[in-house]
Image (cartoon, rainbow, N blue to C red; front, side):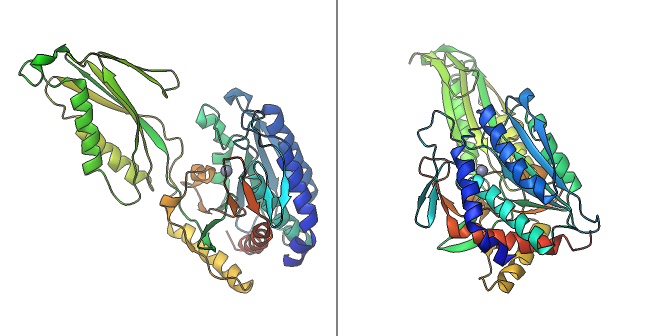
Length: 406
Ligand SMILES: [Zn+2]
């Protein structure tokens, strides 16, 4: 498998170059569809039954769901990647360019580089004969960078694949620190909340007096400062990203703009804030929400407050023992390849991702894609040597896991 990955370096790179040069911004329906076709062309000759799941109902292109039937006895693997990038057709960043050991281009790492690792690894397994009996499903979403709505429909097929699988492997970027490769076994959730405070308005000279109260802005300030003082715990963050209040305050439809009016001599009738919440487990999310509700439920005189939580954009992937055991197997592969063992990345240092949607149903490992720099910005570049290293690791790991009894 190591020899095949190396022998096919040129093939793999020209495949990646072609994918990168085809724009597939999440909203570019035709572009994402074309990249989906390119992946079909790679997967079908390896014996995968490839399905294109149309997602026009969510305002996005669709997903690739590809199944390789093995002998049904080994662990069933789910490989996760994505076809789309953050770079839409109006971005100035559109082309692949080779610069020494790096490949510069939109999606060169995130996640076309990750899909290149998947294909290179599967081809190595195919050549070595270890793919034949392996039960492997590949789900490549077309909207990872900008989810379609509703999210229940947008992630329906990924979640269903997670329920069929025993192990999920996420082919997004390899984490590195101080030049060392790291394994990643947890991702934090990502969710949002809206805090709305209403209060009795009045002449400002009466503020704090009985029967008048404190107004909406002091109450909102009390709540968010109490959050800051009382909620902090390990791996939990909550940011207030938008805030306003006055005689009137109205969020726009996208809830990214606030229109507020007020005067210095009017006790404000309304104050609104929007913020996020990132946590490592469902328990941590629920515990924090309960504390937030309790803080909100004790308003200052004259005010009424309520907090509403959006459905989680990404659920959490907690660092389970099952996930840790897969990293331990990867470290056996590292040992056999003569590579250093990989430690665990601090989940606070990584954003949310698609694998989180299956984390409740299946053990998983994150970051089997290549190492990249500057993701989500023009100039994104992939470390080409890491594509080969990751493809070899993945091919050997998948060959071993798919031989383990379910
Ligand atoms: Zn990505």
